[in-house]
Image (cartoon, rainbow, N blue to C red):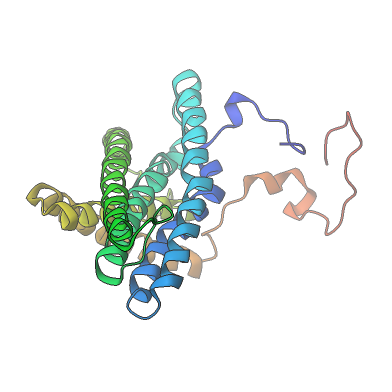
Length: 271
């Protein structure tokens, strides 16, 4: 923000990509803590604490940028057809955030009930300590479920909007899924939907819900099919050397920017 000048037209969904990495890191901490808890519950507890902090650096900031992107879409309109896959990117922090919060709550509860390790206030007696340990664990677990359901619901909105817009554009432009329109940006059809599918399956496991089981299965199958399509097309276009498209390189003669260039002076445009 100190080096670039942004306008409402330059706000795009890919701004979420650096932030999603922290959400992925926080959610992955829950997987590591769950696997580590039988061997070192105290270290697993530390990983859970760090994971919550990392999620705090990602989920709220992702919501801020999602608000900016929604405002940009409402005022300016939808992105160009080549950038339509980016419509699914806000689904990433929603799905991965929901998965992480639910899983971390599960780990906290398991640590308290199985290993007597958790988040407690300074105990006054052994009995009060054990009671406080379980109460806090149940509260964290319940809060994770509620927060996960809220984020999952927000992801459902993004999923419905992005799918509707994509299908509508595909019906109006039958060549949208052809070889010529495919680009590396189509990977946005895999990861965001995939993490929302993992959130669906995790909620189905915790709630023992047939509805979430069906949704998780259907969306998982969709991810597998779309991943297969993206993989084949990426390999095909990569073999022909046409997978990467960088129209901004046309600013330089021959499409080759200089290896080194000085920072432009204030008030001047970069080369």
